[in-house]
Length: 471
Image 1 (spheres, helix red, strand yellow):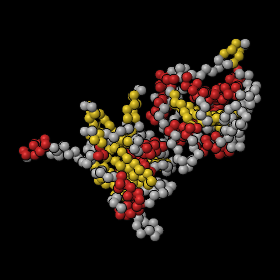
Image 2 (cartoon, one colour):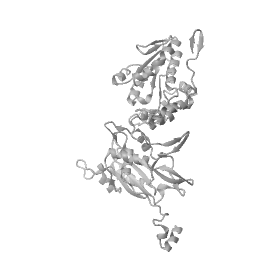
Image 3 (cartoon, rainbow, N blue to C red):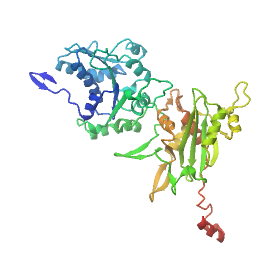
Image 4 (cartoon, helix red, strand yellow):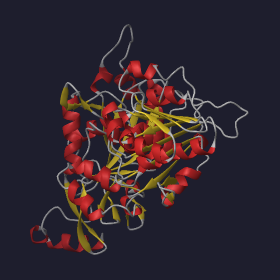
């Protein structure tokens, strides 16, 4: 509340989704969603409310760039501070409250700015547009959130963001999916991270119609992130990868499915007449070895239904496990990293030769990062027609079974364009996508439906007519 001419007025009235943010007790909490939900206002008033509640409370609110800080928080904090009887100093971008509480507004554009926060201590650190920060910046600055034990609260890290930005992938991993590499971050505790998602429709103070009209001129992937809250990384190579297609509020599975399609009640990869291909990208450590299993239907539709990943595992052991995991499948070919057939040092055999000695015959693919991307783009953007529930519908040429191929689904959206050559995929967690590229580049032939005759009926001998009906 503020007082003007002796009359109290509400400076900020939280809506339902904002109230959840203010009441959260999790040490690290993120408000994320579409644009236009009031996330920055929520963050600023969360800090203000705590400063008014606890004497001597110290809060830090950060934007990645100074220009963005000036356009957002610094634009409003002056009038808000005066209404609350607080002192805002424009020269140092801070607010001092009558109870000795304090808010510092800052930015983190470079390494020098980052190092300036490392020796400080704060009761509260707020990251505005968290997806614009790197993981290193977040972790190092967050370490400065420390409160003395005699205080009636714990130090908190709060953040808000839309799902578009260079840090969108790590933000999703740490706060939403809670899938973090424990080998690199052994002390990560998923219970210490949580989030709330909100949409434009939850903000009663903005017009959705006007907002949508302004987004029409933007690229599609930006509209998907800002209007629907879909995670898209700045500079992402595969912006055409879509887990689902949206029609209003309805989502239809697209490149990702949650169950194996069946034929007469049988899961497709178990049918002996369907062709199954494997694709292998070799690695030992830190790069992993990856194998994908892909079934190809008669209409060329490819379904990636299984993946396996190995680290610090010898080639012979990987080959034996792939062979064991393929039991009962009609394996037609196995495409692989061509460097697997290069001998290193005094080794008697190449990795590829070791695989073949252990029952995995290989067909080397091409090693071309530009061709990797193009071949995957082709699969993502090509459609085939299938009959579903008596209707002919279009389905993407490739679909991935999510629960069986989590790393492929996770990493495709976060792969970036090479800054020196945007036609190529940049180095990163690309082992699963590269494995699929080996398959996509190899033009695998589709399965042949044994129940569909290869020749027209009129070209067959009369006795063959009867055999078709008996199959």
